[in-house]
Image 1 (spheres, rainbow, N blue to C red):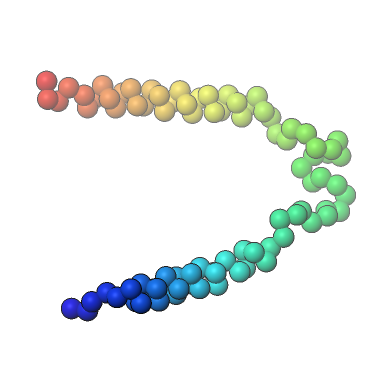
Image 2 (cartoon, one colour):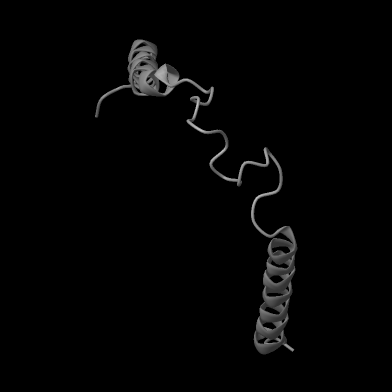
Length: 85
């Protein structure tokens, strides 16, 4: 059985750091600023930045998903509860 030495731990940490930096270089090379598009904002019909899509539908969908999850949770708890009683 091999003994773990402090020098081995330093070498492993150095190797992990170099590997992480090597994999992170392509991420650091990307520019976070948007590229200029031709003709303005492609998400809207020339009216400038604003709400895209139907926000009321999105809100209702989120509420419906939450209520569905609540109902499924209540059904699951009632079906699996009181086993030890």
